[in-house]
Amino acid sequence: MLNLQEIRNDFPILGREVYGHPLIYLDNGATTQKPRCVIDAMTDEYLNVNANVHRGIHYLSQQATDLHEAARETVRAFINARSTAEIIFTRGTTESINLVASSFGQAFLHDDDEVILTEMEHHSNIVPWQLLQARTRIKIKVCPITDEGRLDLEVLPTLFTKRTRLLCCTYVSNVLGTVNPISELIRQAHEHGVPVLVDAAQAAPHLLLDVQALDCDFLAFSGHKVYGPTGIGVLYGKQQWLDQMPPYMGGGEMIAKVSFEHTTFNELPYKFEAGTPDYIATTGLARALDYVKEIGFNAIQEHESALTNYAREQLSQIPGMRFFGPSDDAVISFLVGDIHHMDLGTLLDRLGVAVRTGHHCAEPLMRRLGIEGTVRASFALYNTFEEIDILIAAINRVRKMF
Ligand code: PMP
Image 1 (spheres, protein in one colour):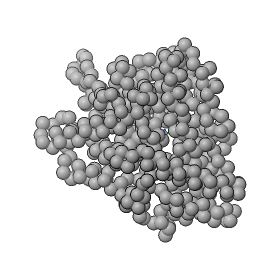
Image 2 (cartoon, rainbow, N blue to C red):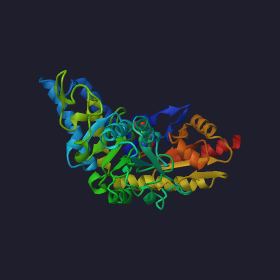
Image 3 (cartoon, rainbow, N blue to C red):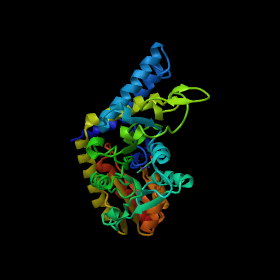
Image 4 (cartoon, rainbow, N blue to C red):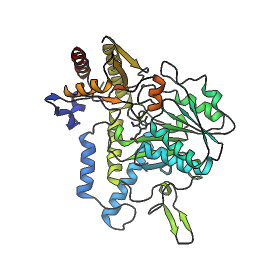
């Protein structure tokens, strides 16, 4: 059981008001709020340690480097990677996927090779593959979803061919709340000799990730969705792939030796980390992951799943309620009668309730659902049942206006 009052006290922003109402923050799928310990860890580093990492022989630089590399070890342990060589710091899920598309693409994807995506992918797991397509004539195949908002597992096996080089799939849908049977998908892909990239942006805050148990080849997530700072994310890659992939960007840190005639590259993971890394954010990310671990995924899941079930139940009693997706996880997408999602979201905001509206960066999925957008309520470990009651009351108030 979570001590919710104690947890809420960890998040200073939850005490503020919006338009004279207490803030009800239900846009956690977009980004989570930050506990004081994360803010303090970053402030402390700026105040007392700040120096560029890896390059200096002086005290502060070494201390900053130690913090940065300790953060890498925290990430490694968090997802149970074999080695810190497999943990690449990026700006977020988007950059992690672009890195794979560009670098794995250059090494392993040639004309007429195929990549399988799914109909429920976020734009950041679609567009990088299209950008690659503009350079190499790869074929993008798409696994459809069922009317219930689950991957069509009867179609998926038919998409593998001799030319399939990668399966890219989200673990949890940011729109439908579907938790995909990712272990099974990875097993199937591997049977065809196909590696798998997992978009874990929506999984990292809610589910225990174990890259060795999953046996995924790549996994991407963002710090800011798991109570950490913005501007930092992770790409996990199996060393056997990363070793064979060319660098993504060129610059400082990623080199071994440089001359105008010939440059050699640094070892993993630095080969993929050109330039000064956001070493303050890596400290914040590590503190956030420690915070989540201290609370524990069992307690988090128990609470979030109770919240999600309660919210679905209460929402379903509202006349004209239409749900999109199964909401296995802490995400509920819906529309109410003929009320436009933007109108509903805007009016809820006036009542202090922050939800997301729109296509949620998943336009192909919206097309499949035959809608323009939804209202999305997404929960975090600090949300309460009372907040859901306020959401319901607010929706009912808005309904009366229409
Ligand atoms: N994939 C999914 C499933 C997401 O929900 C998001 C963020 N909405 C992303 C990728 C992109 O994450 P970021 O913007 O942090 O790079």
